[in-house]
Amino acid sequence: MQQDRESGQTTLLMALFLGTFLFAFVALGVDLGYMFRAKRMAQAAADAAALAAAEEAGDSTAEQNAAEAIARLNGFDTQATLNPATVKLNSPPTAGNYKTSAYIEAIVSKPIPTFFMGAVNHKATVVVAARAVAASGMTSPTCVCLQGGTGQDLYLDNNSTLTATGCGITVDSSSSNAVGVVNNSTVSAQSIGSISTNWYNSSNISNNASISSSTKIVQGISTACKPSMPAAPAYNTSQCTADPVNNHPNGGSTYSVGPGSANSTTQNGDLVCYSSLEVGKNNNSVTLNSGIYVINGGILRFYSKNGGYSNYGGNGVYFYLTNGATLTIDQGAIVNLTATTSGTYSGILLQQDTADTNTMTIEEGSYATFNGGIYAPDAAIAIQSGSGSTVNGPVVAKSLSIDEGGSLTSTPVSNLGTMNLSVAKIAE
Image 1: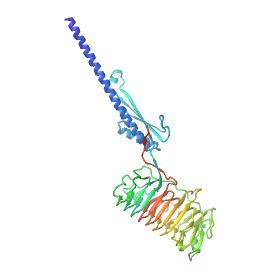
Image 2 (image 1 turned 45 degrees about the horizontal axis):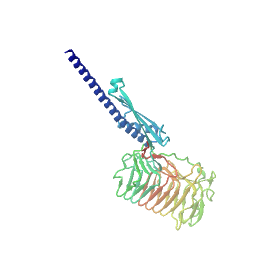
Image 3 (image 1 turned 120 degrees about the horizontal axis):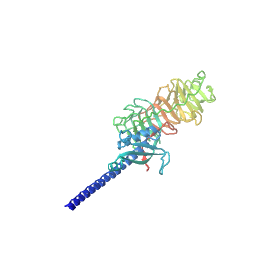
Image 4 (image 1 turned 120 degrees about the vertical axis):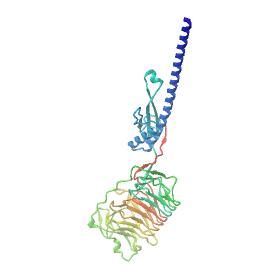
C-alpha cells in the first residue's frame, strides 16, 4: 500500500510538472507571437513616420509633429501614460546606404508588456524598435504668388489658359472660392497650393474647365507666399519730368526715352522719373534706353503701333510705379521688355509700390513678352480677351484674372518660395 501511495504521488508530481511545463511553453509562445506582431507594427509605424517626416522636409518641428501623429495612428503613441513610444528622426540617416540630407531616418520604439518573461525573471516589458528611411518629398518652386488673403485670388474664364512651366502657383486666400477655373479654361503647373482647405470642388472648376492631371493640388498649406520686395529706388521728385511725347504732338516721330535721352533728367547715372510715360502713342517709334524708370503718379502705357512693335529697345530696364501710377497695355499692342541682369533690380522688370492698388491691365489682343519678374503685391493683374503674355520670371500680385481666351505663361527664373508636394518614398 505504501508503494502505491508513493507511486500516486509521483504521478501527481509528474502531472504538475508537465502541466507547468506546457503552460510555460504556451506562455512563451504567446510572448514570442506578441513580440513578432509588435515588431511588425513597429516597422509599419516607422515606415509611416519616415514618409510623414519626409513630406515636411525642411521644417524640423513639422517633421517631428507629422512623424509622431502618424506613429500614434499606428499604435505607437508618444504621449501615452503607460509605456509611451518614442519617435527619433535623423537627417541625414545615421546608418544604411542613404547618409545624405535628402533622406530622413525614423526610429520608432516602445516598451511591450510580456507574459511568461515577466513571471519568470521580472522583466515585465521588452523594448521593440524599428527603423525606416524615406527620400524627402519632391518640391515645387513657386513662380506665381497671389497674396490676397481672402476672396478669389486666381480666376480664369472663357477659354483662358495659365501655364506655369516647371514651377507652381501659390494662393494665399483662405476662402472657399480662392481659385476659380471655368468655361473651358485650363491651368497647367507643377503645383497649385492654397491656404484654403476646400477650394478644389466642382463649383470652382466647372463647365469643361480643367486643371492638368500632372498638376499637384495642395489644399491647406500652412505658409503664405510673401517674398520680400526690393527697396524702392532713390530719386528726386523735383527732377521728375513730363512725358517726352508732349514734345512730339503730331505723331509718327522717332525718339528715345530713359536715361541719357533728350527731354529727360537723368538722376544717379541710370535713373529717370516721369510723371507718366506713353510708348507708341500716335504711331510714334519709341526706343527705351536701358536703366531705371520711375513712374510717379501717372500712367505707363504701351499703345498699338501700326506695322510694328509698341516699343523698341527695352533691354536692361526696370520700371517702378508709385504714388498711384498704373500700367496699361492697349489693345493690339506688341510689347517686348527685358530686365536688367545686375544690381539691386536684377531680374525684375516691373514693380508696383506696395501701397499702390491700381490694377495692371493687359487689354484685348495684345502680346507682351516680359523677360523678368512682375512684383505688384497689392494690385490685381488683369489679362483680357485674346491677349497673350509670357513672363520669363516670377509673378507677384494680389490677384490674377485671365478672361476671354487670354493666356499667361510663367517660368521660374527665380524662386518665390518652395512648396513640398508630399511625394516622399521609402528608401530602406
